[in-house]
Length: 113
Image: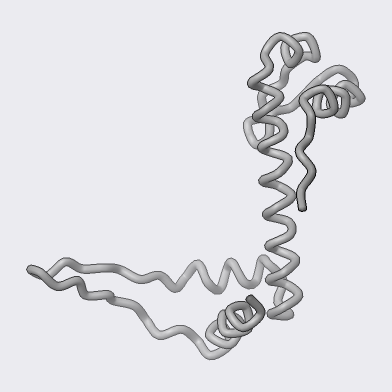
């Protein structure tokens, strides 16, 4: 269960970082004064924190279940996509078959749910 982070706590965490706050993924910098003046920025910071935490958790789960690094899994799975083709009233899905190792990794992930 995730405990909600209060805005004051989020601001305090970022005040410890030499007075400069960096928005998640954007590279923009805000001073503490700007963060205090714009409460919605705190919500963005908290949301970014939760997204990073969730993605790390999902990555660790995939690595644990498959035995692969997340980099290997993403590089292997990225190459295999499906295309849906509309032919009249029918939808045809075109896809290359998955390699055996990727198929086993996906089966392991599905079985762990």
